[in-house]
Image 1: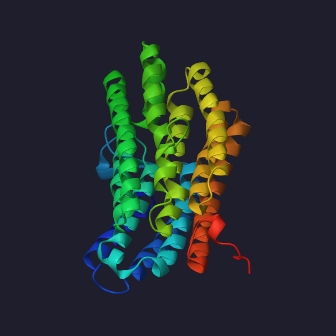
Image 2 (image 1 turned 180 degrees about the vertical axis):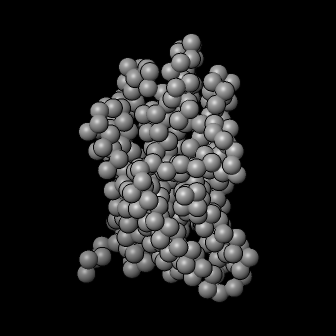
Length: 363
C-alpha cells in the first residue's frame, strides 16, 4: 500500500510544479483548488486504510529500515493529513478572491502547494532526518509566502520569522546528528529501543532537551514564541490562516512524537520542564492577546496560549491527557484557520483589522 502513503505527499508537489510553470496565466488558482481536492480525496482514502488495517508503513525505493526513507501512518498522522487537506482546500478557495495577479505571477499558489506538501510529509515521515528535510521545505516556502506581497511590514515580519526558525532548525539538525552518532539510527521506531538501551542516559537527556528546544521554538512555546505575533499579522490573510492552522501544529506534533515514542526514559525531568513551559505559555499568550487591538495580533497571541494547552496534555503524559491534547490539536487547526479567514472578511468589509476602527461590523 505504498502508493496510499506517497500520493498525499506527491500530489501537492506535482500541483506546485504545474503552478510554477503556468503562473503567468489567469486561472492558475483553479489548478491549486483542483490539487487541493485531489489531496482531500487521498487523505480520506489514507484515513480509511488506517481504520481498516491499523498502522501502515512502507520503505521508499525498497531500501530496508532503518536506513531507507520510511513513510508511516497511524491514527494520529492520518487524521493530521486529513485536517491539512481540509484547511488546504478552504484556503485555496479563499485565495482565489484575495491573492491578486501580481502575487500569482510571482508564484504564490505554487509556494502554497509546496507548503502543504511539506506539512503532509512531516506528518507521514517515519525518521527524524526526513522530518528535518520537511521542516526545511516548510521554512523555505513559508518565507516566500511571507515576503511575496513586497510590503515593508511583511518583509520585517519574515526576517524575524526566518531568523528564529533557522536557530530552531540548526538545533534540530545538531540534535539529530548527535543522536545518530550515539545510536546509529534515526528511524523513529528503531530509536525507541536504541535510546532505552544506550549506556549513557545522561547524553540521551541532553539530546532530548535539544529536541525540546528546536521543536518548542517551532511550536512557539514560552519563552520562544516572539516570532509568531511579530509575523503572522503581516502577510495575506490566506497565508495567516494556513500558518495559524498548520505550522505551529507541526512543532507540537513533533514534540508529541519524540516525547511519547523515543525519549520516555527520563519523564521526571523532561516532562516537568514541559509542564512549566506549558503553563507559562498559556499565561503569557492570553496576557499578550489582552494587550492587542488588531484582529490578527489578538489571534496570534491566542495561538501561543492554546499551544500551551496542547503541550500541557503531553507534559501530564496520561492516556486521558494525551487524548485531550490530540483532540484539541485537531480542533484548533480548523477553528484558528477559520478565525483568521473571518478576520479577512472583516477587513474586506470595513477596510481595517483594528477593533477600534471597525465599529458597526455587525450592521
